[in-house]
Length: 227
Ligand code: PEP
Ligand code: MN
Image: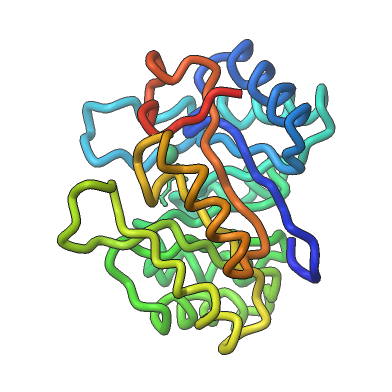
């Protein structure tokens, strides 16, 4: 990711079953993705919503990696899981809701696994850069930034994709920038135009949610592309 290489990350919001994650992994690989995403620990707004398969989800991701060779990215929510994530995944995601969980960021600064740091729902670019500094100050300089849309007054899209973050960040930092048009837009038919716009604006990669059966997805079906 970065250094002139445009990275494609794709996969379901959440790992649900073995068939689902293996099937989606094979499909996104065939479509050109280089990294598989899949949530195992899910930060859901409602405590009654599907919370992810947790450790079992990470195991299924490892199986998908074994079968396809695709490296894995998954979200961490608690520092006590760091040893497990170091073992299971290639890239550790810090989600929007934890962008300013400074104690988590400090712990991630102690390891050397790359971190995909997502922009908080209502955080400025400078705040995102300071969160990256929390990780790098500990010695882990393998940080990738991810713009995933921010909260505005607009309700026609799930969030507002701040494409201006790309050229602004390019001026301020050497860190690679990945755009997540899935969480930004919230609807699958809006993902492609903003993915293309992100590429034109200079992003270093894309992260796209893909599900084998979006209508039955346990999380984020409406924004998921089919393989
Ligand atoms: C996700 O990537 O599935 C996710 C929960 O993203 P965000 O933290 O950007 O909402
Ligand atoms: Mn999601």
